[in-house]
Image (tube, rainbow, N blue to C red):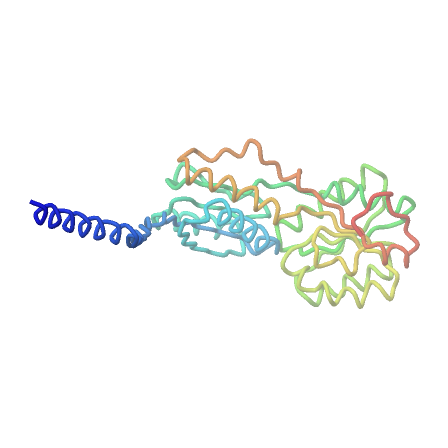
Length: 302
């Protein structure tokens, strides 16, 4: 009987030892496995005009905001460029047939003459705003005693011609004398600039592709002659006492944020809260104004 008890007791301790040994070893760690969800894929069409030279900034702001707002989405962008509003309209219709989720009309010039009833894709169009009157006000503010303003513009450009006409109306209203210098090519543009130096006290140039392309050459014409220039394009800043324009990158960001909401929530594009004039900027060239002895407003950007 004692031997039997000893045998059971030994078996008990053996089982206990096995149990304790098993408990002393940690269990294997759980296997980690990440399940990757397929990213959302959006196809975006961007149709932009190259006539003003600001559409690259507008488009960059739009895409930056879109990628930031939908970081995990795969975004394919189809871009078309045009040098006039009619071509821009036809290319917009072509993009509409490409199976897009959204179409962005990045035109910083005149509004596209487009019948939106023909477009099935949700469309965001850039709100336009003509800064010409603000350019005229700034010119009058900086040069209150100006005798004659030379208006140099590309007469074949509808946008530049329209802005030149609006500037003439502003100057007429404020009884400021002016002379217009329509140009059709690079040669007549340079000739008009030289004539302004001989006949006027200041110059206004509405931006278009031709004018912007001659910005560097105008510096060698106007600055030695002491002719203060004002314009609506950043490329003229080194030659100008001031630039009045829009912050197109920030405007593009606001439109890109709207696009993200449209894509994610399936809502219709609502531009009622987006106003281009909210992005108006006055960029003063302090150094050049000091050289020309032009007094600046108290608050300036430069």
